[in-house]
Image (cartoon, rainbow, N blue to C red):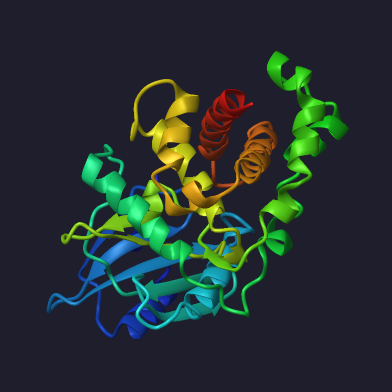
Length: 306
């Protein structure tokens, strides 16, 4: 359960209201995501609207860094980009707070409908055409210590499932190629789950939450989206073929070479396989189960492809 606007210290509320330019008279916490901080739509006395995020390092020491990264990267998004505009940031340790324009819309995938799925695919396809700002890090710079899960599991001697154990050497070998296959100049969102999107009344979707922005191969965002959508029931049928069929609905998926796709799925599966076996981080009790589910879907996808 997320903390609410009402639970924020008065100093944080005052700072956010100063950025928004109105006093908050109503707030509605958002259900999606895993952040241990406040994430809420807010309204003023004359109907003014905004969206706020705030977290304390005392709850989770890593989340403030993500909020700072999001503020930095959101400010780089090109003019006219279909995402909520950052209005301002307040950073006073241990708290950091961000205020954005409010986007009128609903989260897709609650449950997934064909129009919502089409809107999400179109949004990710559109983002694949956005060139990364030169100030963005590369996906190798941001994830080289994370997308080595199979190697880490092998080095640690972690108990694995029978299938993982039989194919561990192959998984480690495939994973090692992600650096070259992940290179590119697309602006990656890299966390394009349904709860990081909003479908507007006109039927178009926008991506929100940009802390993992980086430059890389456009198909990365499609691959990252698919396990979450499949788990949410966006498509039916056997998991492996369903994932491949969904990938073909993305322009980047149709264009990507088979080996590139398989390599990046392997790297993503390794990340989830390693992460879900770790103790839960402070303030995030549900994330390991989410990672386990995503990893199982990735492995089913890999078994189908290989």
